[in-house]
Image 1 (tube, rainbow, N blue to C red):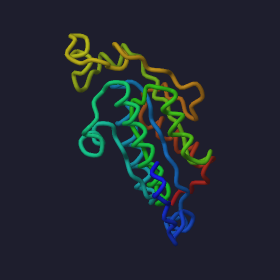
Image 2 (image 1 turned 45 degrees about the horizontal axis):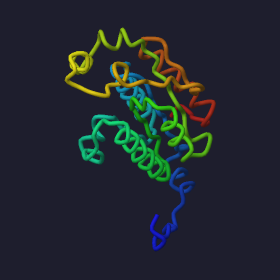
Image 3 (image 1 turned 45 degrees about the vertical axis):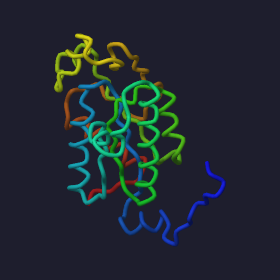
Image 4 (image 1 turned 180 degrees about the horizontal axis):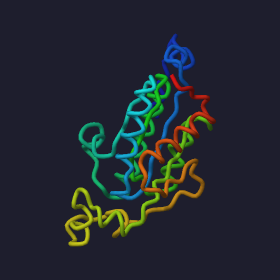
Length: 198
């Protein structure tokens, strides 16, 4: 880091922003294979939280690569940088008092830990959407598995690049029932962050 850079301390604190919104900010980090249902679950969860009056923002892998990370490829170094940048954006959003929902394959344990380490313990909740590769490949909503199998895409998670299963996620999703999964996450939030129905 440039020695001439200093952090500018703002007068309004994270605690004050959170109090104004009436919520405790956090990151819900959904990880899993392509086609596992991360984005579908994140969307449904955000809709429910929004309907309850919470202030949220959803970051999705493809959306981020359209703008902030459009200069990155899919080699291992680029994927690490992709997650690093997203983690820093999440940190800013949490400082703003928001509940941030993140849907990213994020296949490497060390990168997920790197993001986790940016936050206080109660601010980061890892959600492992554990859908078998066979089912993800059968769904193949974007046709990416087919392209990977045909050699048209390199470094594709689950095919020629590994996915490191989370060891201790706060939430382990194995059911295909969307509403049941949303309810499970909301139950944990109510216990962990003292959420209230509004």
